[in-house]
Amino acid sequence: MSERPTTTSPRRAELLEAAYAYALAHGLADLSLRPLAAAVGSSPRVLIFLFGSKDGLVRALLERARGDELTLLDRAGQLSGSEPIGLAPAVERVWAWLAAEEHRPLLRLWVEAYARSLVEPDGAWAGFARATVDDWLTVLAACQPDDERDSPEGLIRRTLALTVLRGALLDLLATGDTDRVSAAVRAAC
Image (tube, rainbow, N blue to C red):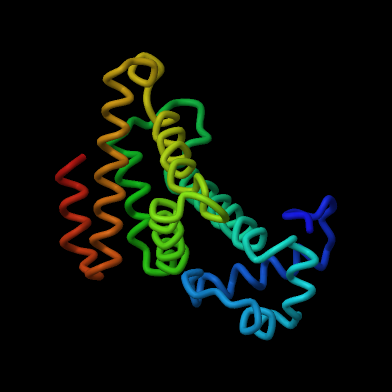
């Protein structure tokens, strides 16, 4: 059986969106096709047919989450302007987005997928953690002036910025202490 269908149907897109909403609410750790199918108005057989396998569905959900993450990070950093804003303002803007309560479901899903990618490097989770590191470094690079971006020091600075954001995100999700963690992020900028 193929892992991915060769065409994208409107029904597949509809079920992907419904499954994504389900994953945001329930996570992916113990994903079972029967409860998911019931929740999205489908059957396990239809999900297997449309996504090729449970792993194919999980991969599609991870791709969907990465797309949301990148879109929202870009918007948070207002990175599409003509002049780079610099790392410190970018970190502050991205942090403001990360710290917003309404983004917690996506961020919890991201953390779950990131961790699973590290401990289960094969299958549906393969490469997710590495891809998101690359995604975030690319977003942060767009914030740097050309001369900084293209230097070894520029890579070090954006890696440090990413480290601060990721560590702060984990702390925030674990404690919910927005004020304390936000103050630490501001101090690190």
